[in-house]
Length: 129
Image (cartoon, rainbow, N blue to C red; front, side, top):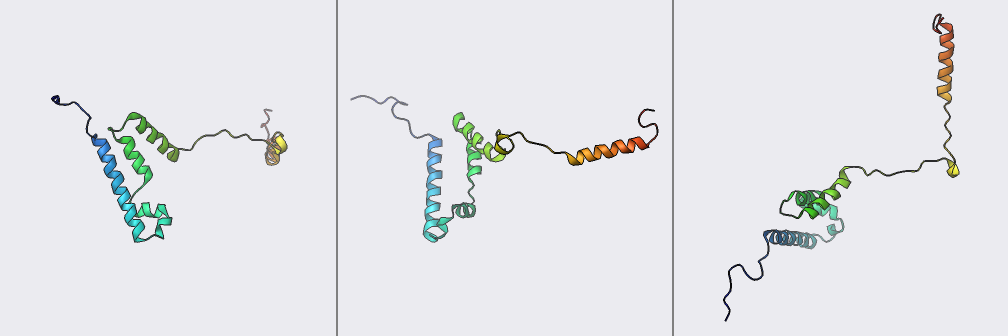
């Protein structure tokens, strides 16, 4: 009969895996209790999460800052959260009707320039005389 070498064989679940299971079990239990208490309220998950104090963005932030989580998952969480915190830049094509160039009419600017020219003509030495 073979003798078991200490440290050999299949490893027990990691602390992180155990913690994830506990969190998932508690969330499942909480949601099941809420569902059985008031099935009508189940239709609005935002309300349920708010009453339970659960916010997916906060949960993602916690995962993103957990040093026991792999860097790939943490980076993914930060990227997903960033989409909610910073606007995404997009290129937008601007054009006139039927793809024609935009036509600007600066009537007020032209009127102001004309008025300034008239005022300058009335002021002595304003034109460099």
